[in-house]
Length: 158
Image (cartoon, rainbow, N blue to C red; front, side):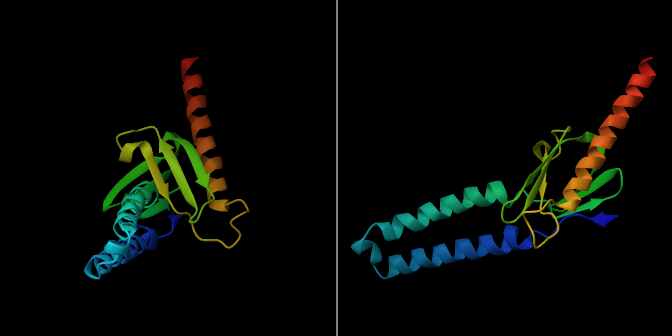
């Protein structure tokens, strides 16, 4: 088994904790020193940033898998202490986003498993503009797994 993901601890836990703590402290200091009397923006901006941060983390960080292990013809995915096995032939699409951090989103056939999408951070690499060898390898193996299944069905139908 080969680990093809990086721990999302910083993005799922550490950074959101820092973000919301800083904004809460900023809000409390603003209220306790009466800064809102000078400008109402001292009350409104932290609230807007808390709401913005919540939706940002909900859509881009809190959905990340904790660990993805490649076991040849299947992936073993752990997210929020739940484990699941996903066969490569059940992966419909692989979306590789070269953002910070890099993100790989697998769309799977079974919509019951985490809404049909599994996102994870691939292993860190310095040259993010080049092709990711883990993602390229996974794309090729998923394509082979799907083509093998179609060939078996065609042969059985003859």
